[in-house]
Length: 149
Image 1 (cartoon, one colour):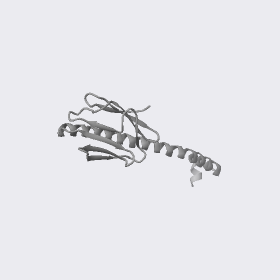
Image 2: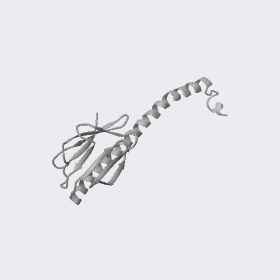
Image 3: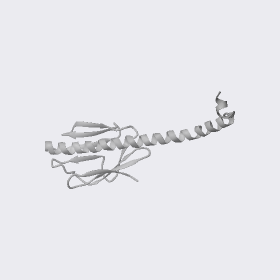
Image 4: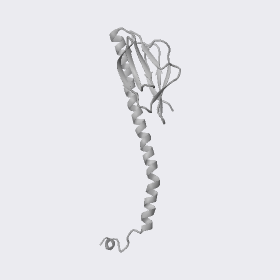
C-alpha cells in the first residue's frame, strides 16, 4: 500500500543506514552542547543567588549595626554569612563551581555602615567552561559580578 502511494519506490536499506550514520555522528555534539548550556544556566542562577546573599549581608550589617562577614568555602561547598562569628545564612555551592582568589581574599566584610572593610579587589567564580568575576569596590560597599571573556 505505502509503495503504491510513492509511485512504487520505497526507501532502501542503504539510504536508511546513511541517515542513521549521520544521526549517530551529530547526536553526541548536540548532547555535549546541551550540557554546556545547562552548566551556563546553573552558574548564572548561582551568581544571582550570590548577589542576593551579598545584598542580604550588607543590609544585615546596616540593620544590626554590626560587622557581617561573608566567607567563600570551597572545601565545604558553602558561602557563609556570619554575624558575630555565628552563621546566619548559608548558600550551597555546586560541586563544579569554585571561588578563586584574585586580588581579594576569599571573604568580604561589611561594616555597620554597609561599606566594605579592607581593600577593593576581585574574586573569580569558575565552572569548567565559564567564569565570572566578583568585583568589590570600596566606598559605598558596592560590588558587581560580570562574565570573564
